[in-house]
Image (cartoon, rainbow, N blue to C red; front, side, top):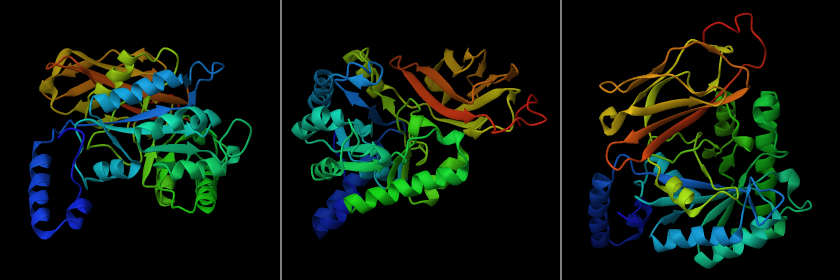
Length: 362
């Protein structure tokens, strides 16, 4: 199953006999699809902007990346198709890619858009509506042209705040107003949302879902598996002048590490203190026991113990956090092929200091 797959909608549109054949194909492809098949959601920002070396990509490099996808038979998917994979409506392709671009900078229109049209790829641009039409940003006419050429537009809030720093009432307003403005100007339902700065917690996720967003995209590194939650979609950042083709390919190929029983889980903590950090890795026999690692943004690599029989990975050293937002990243090296599988998510400190701030996190 390389580059193509058959959805239920296609089956319904086919004739009776062709539909029967297609249904058999769906069954066979689904049965053969690996549990660990994944989709890479690529994240871009600026193009050919030398004053932003950490977030810009040259148009030559972008063209080379898009050409690589074509020459190596990647299935470049729309957000609707990604939603179908995450919701279980269609199977994960073996080599799936989704192209996303944040913020709506003018260089996305002048530099990236012509390349995307050349290859005929679907893509999605996430705009924060306060900036639309401002200097160095796309205007509504340009966004409408994007939508006429296989592009989609998603919400990136109205003023692009750190959502974890503002009251939840303002969070709701940011997500609601931006959605309404885009729908008014473009005449289409807005179903996709990207968290500004990649910041989220459990309440912010709930607000986005309640407002009618179907997928919410993070900046957590990693690829999308069939276990992915629709309000915590990871993305691979393809930014910076150090983004070589080798690094680009490694991000496409990175397997998903499927975990459960994560403690703490993603979202707000009850205090600043953690007694331990732990999780369980699915199918632990797939990984090299000595090359399973856990990282926390503020602390770096954590000292852990790993039980290869149960998949339980534990850091039992107590710690107190000072950074408001931390990312927990777990990697494990596959025995077969030697690639590193990834899992990552955010934890956020509580808004106020509690009396038991330094006590252990439940």
